[in-house]
Structure formats: structure tokens, C-alpha cells
Image (cartoon, rainbow over all chains, first blue to last red):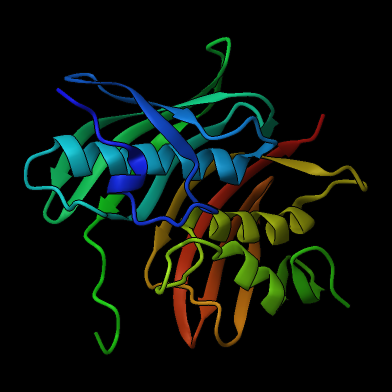
Length: 131
Length: 117
């Protein structure tokens, strides 16, 4: 299976896109490499993980929206509030509830140490007012 | 008097209210998304944590965000118009917060802080 470039799937402009490439996509979920080496304050780490979850849904989960938005974060534990260096963003599909898709997410540093772990719920994008 | 992300901050007892600097709101939306800008959820959580941390600071020590118990996003927080963050201390190290943007509640969160290192 040829994996698409994240830029081809995500709606994010280059300033906001934090995932560089898909390193792994299989039944266990997705793992992506980060764009750049930081610095990575925790909001950027969390956003990167959410982008990985969005890619997972857009590429590999049947019936899921291609460009979902974040509806909720839950049980997010910050093992570090900032980091430097290349990161790995991972996500795994957990379950669907109505029109929401929940994934587990985690962020690890180059040595595999957990930095952030939690859950993100994604939803279809809202139509823009006037669109 | 403002600080960091906020143009004005008012703290009274266990509650705080702040207005986000318009330039800050615009910067947080960069690339998210082209032609349809709104603040990413994690950065809304960060605004709530930035304000909420002021309510749980103990003896001047800067607290550290440990956990986002839950953060729900109800409406897009667009950079046009006023963006207000409110926070309320609800227990030791625990804060409930919300972001209001464009006259709507954009996000609500329960955050847990611990001592900084």
C-alpha cells in the first residue's frame, strides 16, 4: 500500500502541519514523524498527535471523514510540558459513537520516551457559515 | 494589565477573566485552515491553562499542567471579534475554564495542575 503524504490528506497549511511523513499504518494504528526538531511546547505536541489521528481516520477508517476536526480531548496526561528533537506522533482508532470517532494518541521522543498520552475525539468538519 | 497571550487579565478570588490579544489569536490560527481560520483545539486548551495556572499558583511557584481531564470544543474560535477566557478554581490544583469567541462558547475544559519543577 502506497501511503499518501500528510499534506495531501490534511487541510492544514504548511505553517500548521506538524506531521512530516507516515512511518507506519496498520491494524494497530498510525505512527508519524514530526516536521522539524521543535521546540515542542505541549500544545504543539498535542496538536501533532491530533493530526496523526486525523490522518488515520482520513486514510484507513471506513466511513470516517477525510478532514475531521477535533471535538474533544480526554484523559490527556502530560509527562513533559516541552521537548526538543524529532518526535513520533501515534494514534489508534478506539471506537465510534454516532458521528464521532475516538482515538487514543501518544507522543514520544526520539528514544521512545512517552511525552503526552490521551484520547482525542474527532468529528466531521462543520460547513462554513455562508458556504 | 495584560501578560503573555492576554491583553487584559482580572483575577478575583478563585476566578479569572482575560481577553486574548487579537494578534495572538491570529497567530494561533496560522495555517489552520487556509481560507477558514480558527484556533486549533490544543491552543484553546493552552489559553485556558495559561489563565488557569494563575489561580492555582502556590506561594509564587509556577504550577505545571499535569492533565487535561476533558476539553470539549463547541464552536470554532475565529480570530475575528473578541476572545475571552474565563477560569475558576474548583479544588486543589484543579480548574474549570472556558473560551468564548464571537459571542459563543467555543470550548470548556477541566484542567489539573501540579507543582512545577
